[in-house]
Structures are given as structure tokens and as C-alpha cells.
Length: 140
Image 1 (cartoon, helix red, strand yellow):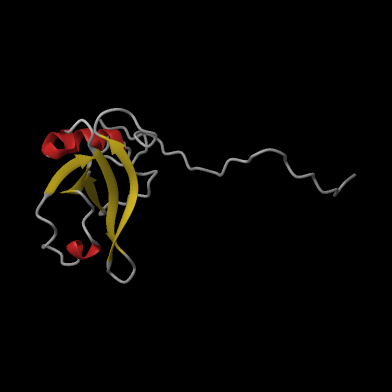
Image 2 (image 1 turned 60 degrees about the vertical axis):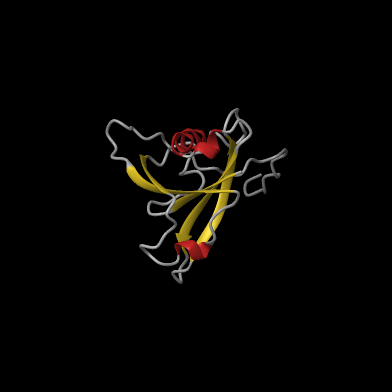
């Protein structure tokens, strides 16, 4: 019959997840990622409130939007001795201003210093990173 309604599809439908094409790192200029590390917990949003007075524990990394949490974990381990502990856990958060200009610190994932976790392969773009965001890393 023309115009007859189609029956609903059965089974679980996967939500649409955008696929991010890998970046050609030979042809694409990297971005500057400002990374702030802290032992024990994340920085609070007020720590980023005044431009030029961000936390002192900053590392600047040149990377691409397809950098994975595992890749970032390994870079943090190079500069933060606490992240090299065998049982260290790294919690990642983006710090960025909201529409009113107040900073928000939003947790986006965790990795272990050694071993593989389920979020290790997540890339910055998938997690909602935008150029200009800061990366806050709590080392626990």
C-alpha cells in the first residue's frame, strides 16, 4: 500500500556518533595546548579566572585535536614525576569560559599511568575540546 507507515525498526539503535577523521600530522599545523597539572585533585574554576594569573604548574604541549588520552598521559608522565607512579591515575578536565566569561572545569576522562583503560583511545575532538580550552590534569 502506498503511504502505509513503516513498522518501527527493532533492536537497539546506536546513537549517532560523529567520526573524526585523523589529522594528517605532516600537513596540519599543531595547536598549543596549555596543560595544568595538580596532585590530588583538579584545579577549581577560580584558579583560571584572571588571565595571566593561571596556576603556575603549566606545561605547554604542541599537539593535534586527534591526540588521545593515552598520548597525553605519556606526555604528562615526562614532566610530572607523580604521574610516573605505577598506581597513578590521571583525571582529565577541560577548563574554558562559559558564555558569561566565568571558567568551567569539566571532567572528560581518566587513564592509568600504566596499563590500558577504556578511555585511553578517546581523542580530544571526541571529548568536545575546542582550540583555546585548557587541559587540567589531576594526578591521583
